[in-house]
Image (cartoon, rainbow, N blue to C red; front, side):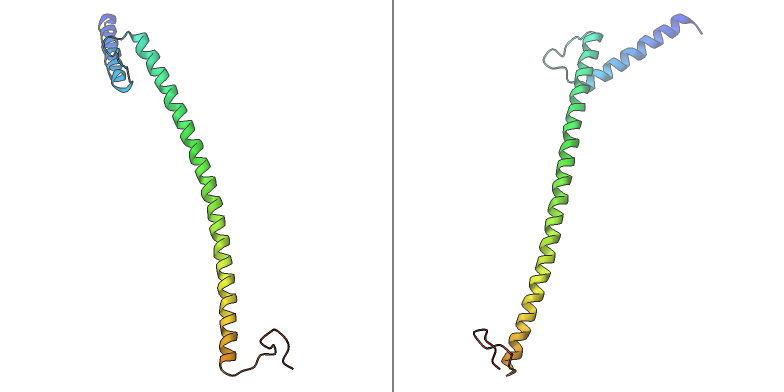
Length: 115
């Protein structure tokens, strides 16, 4: 293997990678000619910015999951409360229907015993 051929091939591959990097990194108004160092510096800053955004997004996801769990617990409590109220309401309406059929309850209209 000829070292000169290997070196040219390496440089060509490096140029190709730098061109691909230019397509991935926002270069701003001075998108003309960038040095390799400036391109790599911008790439590093862009990666840091993306990592910060990812951290914030993950934090927000965690907050939303906590809120969802809290709301789910509240919904379950309300469901249990609704079941309890429905059963009380059902038993009250069945007591009323018993009195409608002429059956007397031990309590009078004002809550006094009718004995």
